Length: 249
Image (cartoon, rainbow, N blue to C red; front, side, top):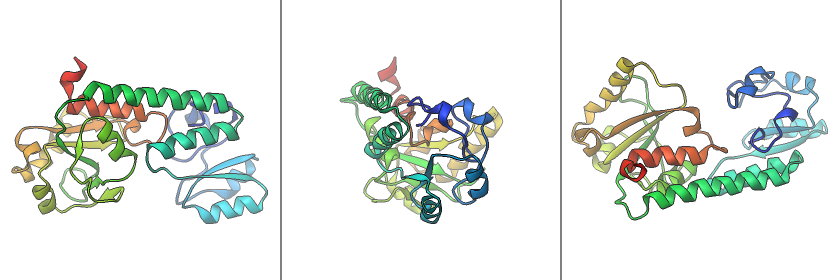
């Protein structure tokens, strides 16, 4: 978000997992959600520190040190867009924040227009799974930006009635929910073809599920797919291209 609104040159440190945009790779690493390096952070003499909303102890520590803190929580799309405006204003780039929000809304509207009127397949959005096995499966529930992106992309969330961001269903529950499409999201780069085949084959255990039976199990790779930030328009289009490929011909 900071780089998108033009505040990139002002960023003096990033978390251990930041890799986008490429400029982040040259910046000091200061830990992450569970292991923030407070001494390292303070040594960079920041005027503003962005923390996640659950890091209340860290927020209090920096506030007592006289440093402004912005606690960020991702929720639905509206909360992401508001956060863009917030960080733009805090860093002196309010007009750029408004521009980014307009561009994102335009991208999302364009995706929605593409798929309007299409039949909405019952879709399971998988956000976690043990490698090579059908264990530790987590799927998107009925709240949060991923659920909303799926809705924009023309999919009917198979777990949309469960009002949580993430659900850990059993194999039996997935069989009962009978998704017509399975989209599995991975933040890393796409693996070699052999690995990809093995990962997709893990779903063969649920051969009675319509998505498995008809070959509509899709493994998508890329950090933008799970990032609650200025690339959500790109993620919505990726979902829509899987669900409604004919709309993009």
